Length: 454
Ligand code: GDP
Image (cartoon, rainbow, N blue to C red; front, top):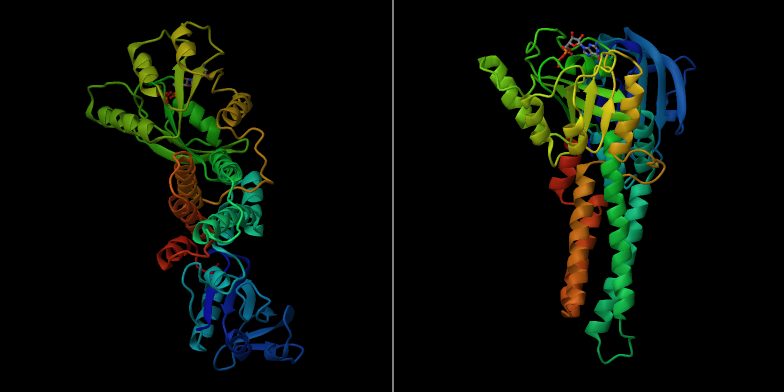
């Protein structure tokens, strides 16, 4: 196994920077470019020890000073020997130190290679590795808590419990089917059914929690729609706390689609402002309109904005139509002005209708609460296990599909073999989730999106 090295701190100037090495020669290479003030060599240090000293160039010139930390296999993040060389956090200094360890025999780490080695050395499973990614990407308290739980192994534990249920069911079924002459008790239809249903219920809950939690952990693809001048840009600026869109009182001037991630309470919205859905003659405006329609189709959530101080128009009605069947929130804006909007059609079409003024900061609380309720995030318990990402969700969903097939086969009175094939496939999906039976391609895919140095 090669010894890998990378800068593990962000690619920006900061107080401290860190070059991390992992592999057989990690400590030896670190020692070759380090002179401790105590005179002790890094190679003589036991695991979890730190030494202060100077990093040296090949000719003995001092490159920087800092603290070097030594971890000994297998008690380290990767399960291998690790040296973490902390230096001053300038971009140039960390780069120089990295080049120095390359010159001494370390090779550049691939994205996520430290975590991949941790996975390959059995320090964590694939679900936990994805938890690491989510911790890094977390944008809020709840997201961090959820990711931390995955990292700590809560999802893996849940999946193992489901797997155990299925393995026992499959084993009992197989034994009974394979040795009909032996005195093996017949697998009772009812108890098998119960076991499969229990497993299916656990997976359904994981999927539901993930979908609701996604609003917090990954952000909801949201589109703000409404005819020109209803206050979309004002609302967007209120949400983002800064002037991002072009706010103007001339109808139709917000032409570009501006995308932005904002946090409202604990909900993360991935917002795009649009040019409205007006069927305008002007070419630029028309492109905006087409984009708005496409965006509504591709969005997880539509915030439909109406002007409370203007009568309902056909453009508003067109928006109401476009929103049918989508997860939507209607906003009647400009409540600080006298109401001239007849809201009956809107109230009839949308489950949630909010009355607010985008010019008033208090609207943020109203929006936060409504979003939380609408997206099912209210009351979500992030100390529970929450799947870390679409891959894990897909595995659960596939497993659930097989379990439903198994239940159907059972009810249809099909042979034990047929039921067992489905149970086996479900187990396969769950083992892919944890990485115990994941193909090289799956593992590559998981680590592809990691950052270098993690
Ligand atoms: P957009 O075309 O939908 O993006 O609308 P804008 O955000 O550009 O707003 C159009 C006009 O309505 C601007 O003059 C805003 O200042 C005004 N406006 C937006 N929200 C409110 C509100 O809650 N109350 C009042 N009185 N004016 C508002």
